[in-house]
Image (spheres, helix red, strand yellow):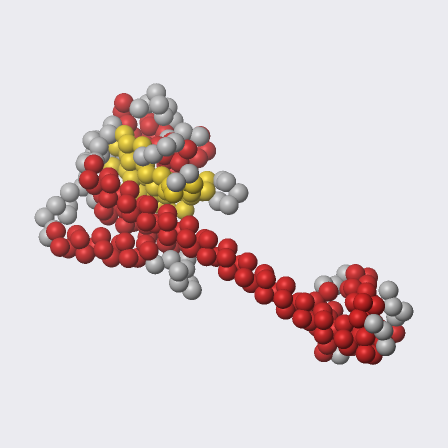
Length: 255
């Protein structure tokens, strides 16, 4: 994959500064307004920039295991990615389902391998491709594909750089997902604790007003919630607040 070469005369320091900025941006996933879609689009653009190609696209697996196109540098690239998903063939799918990168320096030689994708890509002006999986150990979450109008495979140092960008993005994304899941668990535990406190307080109110024991008060509270198809914590809150919506609870025989 020969690259466009328009940056060949840029100072090395400028290129290094761009790379440093890229890796810092990709590592910064633990922010309050983190946007997964924007993050993946940025990763795709930065990877294409590092390999000095103009066309790139990304497919990612949903939590249900379905592959979706989430980033594309052009409508042409989006259609080439969708074509692979619809027909079950192409370098993007091979990178996602295989064991590593997929490189093709000349699609004219791969019409047997990709009988649908290769002719379509050539017709749209694409001659060579490089697909890199988003992989962390045994977990693969997607694949980025770079498209070039020129034949030839990219130099290995440049490929390793692209792989490094994708690896950092994958680690950052999975770390962010883990933190989200951990936060969700913390919130669920906090909700459970809050509900338990409300229920205990409501039991005390019922026990005092109905002159029954705490176990009987809980059975009354639970029975009322079930018969009215309301959440137990919601009824408990209403009892504590003295809401008219549960006034009949104290006129009912204990359950």
